[in-house]
Length: 80
Image (tube, rainbow, N blue to C red; front, top):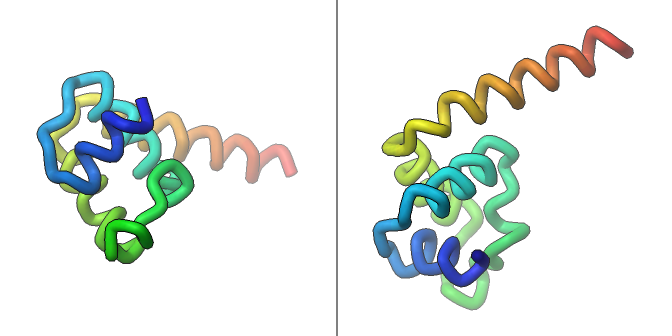
């Protein structure tokens, strides 16, 4: 999976639907850099994040993922 994510984020390959959904999740959680270290590829975290955003925008699951994460964060804030 890491290789597929790396190919999409670093090598600009078009990801399959499952990989795109995973990248959308990583993007929503703001942790792309924890899966793919941008330094060896001479990229910044911002560049890696921008590529993840490009993929997320075209992915049907990204809106649902963002909504679930937002709802979870709201529930956590209300419980505290």
